[in-house]
Amino acid sequence: MNTLPTNGERPADGTPLLDVSELTVHHGQLRALDRVSLQVFPGEVYAIIGANGAGKSTLLRTIAGLHRPTEGAIWFDGQDVTRVRPERRAARGIAMVPEGRRLFESLTVEENLQVGATYARKGPWTIERVYEMFGWMAERRSQRAAQLSGGEQQAVAIGRALVANPRMLLLDELSLGLAPVVVQRIYGMLPQILATGLTVLLVEQDVSQALRVASHLQCLLEGRTTLEGRPSDVTAEQVEAAYFGLARAGHEGQRESDSLCSGSTTSSRGS
Ligand code: ATP
Image 1 (cartoon, protein in one colour):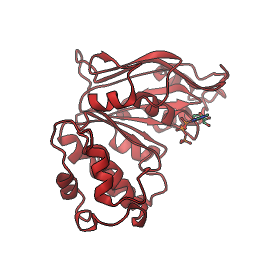
Image 2 (spheres, rainbow, N blue to C red; image 1 turned 135 degrees about the vertical axis):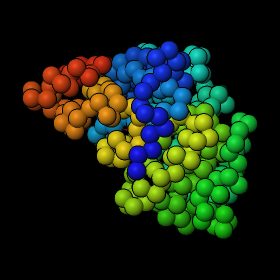
Image 3 (tube, rainbow, N blue to C red; image 1 turned 120 degrees about the vertical axis):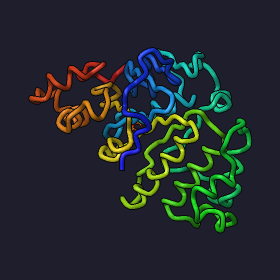
Image 4 (spheres, protein in one colour; image 1 turned 180 degrees about the vertical axis):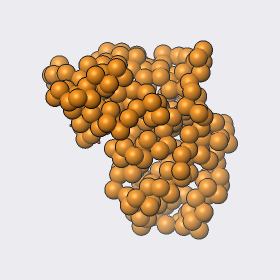
């Protein structure tokens, strides 16, 4: 199933909801992101792909305000939020579903959702609406999160983000540790989420899953952009080369891949 919200065409004169410019982030001496830029337009599903340690989570967490960039800027809805605190970014409409769900395991399903609703913006999402979307959830509202399966926990984590009524949802590795059929079911909810006017920036290691749902994608390798474009405009070979860094090793896909690159693939990760 393809959940593209549009035909993938980007607005020629539109304003991006999220505009990340030349973002560099260090963890100590390690340059986890090196001049990464991206623009996400309203209603898009923008996917960040890349192998372990590519910098995907660092990018999402920096957009949410959990890491401070060394250089670069983050604009959200026309305002510079680079130095805005995480809770203020949430209030402006950025919500994240973190890698590994991170529910409060000793709290019930409903209590976890209430945490998400604490500083909710006005909007269509309520706890009841989340229960409507995930049919099984209402009758298990009193169960502790620890008693849920991984897929169920992921659903609660998504619900917790939705009840804050964000404008942009950051999804970090929804598929992590879940069976393929569960991943399909979770991603099957995206159209309903997008229909309420949300924009999605997601991180995925499962490339085929990302390609299925994304209207735009970017591949990171060792903190740098190696590929950027619409899924319909890139070949499997280009994605593979960008993902594994084959272009850097002189793979024959290099020229094609480089034409889609917005950054060099030769990098030293030191600061
Ligand atoms: P994964 O899929 O494994 O989560 P990723 O693409 O999300 O990978 P990041 O988690 O952003 O990558 O990590 C990028 C690099 O930064 C890795 O080398 C990682 O070890 C390092 N790193 C991430 N977070 C920290 C941290 N808090 N302190 C030190 N190093 C970190």
